[in-house]
Length: 143
Image (cartoon, rainbow, N blue to C red; front, side):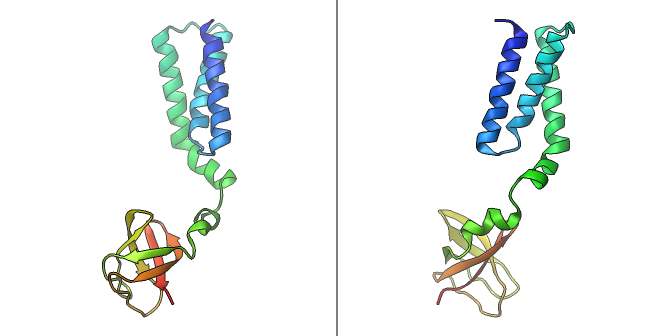
C-alpha cells in the first residue's frame, strides 16, 4: 500500500470519526492527513519525516486557527450544551454565600458553586443547578 493511500485512508477515517463524535478537533487531524496524501499524489517529493511534519503543522494550524470558529458556527450553543444540567441536584460541600463561591459536589466532582439570590446555602444541603457560567455552577436552594 502506498503512502498516499495510507494518509488518505487515515484522513477519511479521522474526519468520519469527528463527524460521529463532534469534537471539532479530530477533523483537523484528518485534514492534515488528506493534505499530506494530496501532496504525495501530486508528486511532491516527501520523505517520511517531511510527511509527518506536514501532517503535524497542518493539523496544529487548523486546531489553533479554526477550531473555535467551527465550534461557534456548527456546534451547540452554550445554552444547549448546559441544558442537561439544569435542575440537577448537587450537594453543597462548602458554604455558598451570596456574592461568593463555595464548593459543591456534582457527578462525583467538586465544582465552584454560586447563587443568584440572597440565600446562603450551607454545607451538607442539597441544591439545584440553575445554570452554568464557565466553571462556576449557579445553584438555588432545593425546596
